[in-house]
Image (tube, rainbow, N blue to C red; front, top):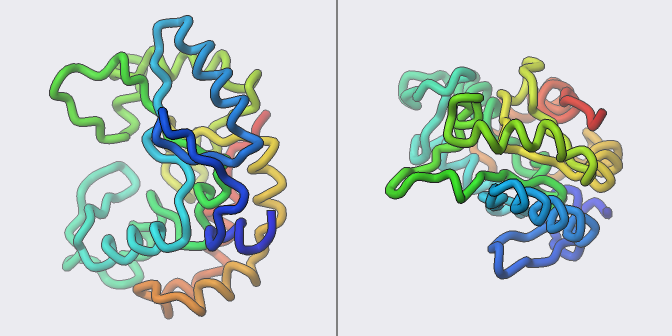
Length: 225
């Protein structure tokens, strides 16, 4: 991927799967569809909830959280009030669940958030919280199936455990043949350039902490093996 693709400012590396309403890196499509077919054999309707996300979409998510227009959660998933947070605290809280624009793995088209549509009760609103993916949660069967099967299709969970950066996201899968080289290619200097040129809210606080953000929230992940 080139620098524009790595930072979400281009979509020349992704294709749209209209039936699933998702967008993936062209190299990830066949493996994801094969995994979805295998899951169906176990009674699981493996459904993407979020896939490729471009820079502007990630920027809007960040800025709306900064403004208190979208929920901000602490590392345990507890709702915070934006007006009670300092700007430094707001950056930390947002980063626990949302990447800085330019630094999201969703820019690569390799990463996808998934649910089991067959397990969703009528009228239930999926929240994408860890409790839903626990053994006794509505997606407990999905979690167990992915634990056993996802790696044979090239997928892994980059945020499977708490490493002090992004909070655990058991719904977030990553296609290793694309995401591993993408992470190696995304430099701190390239990320700094796109953030400096952006309209990100809290820019001074983000830039001041960017080396730490790059290390804690981008590089500190669970690997594919």
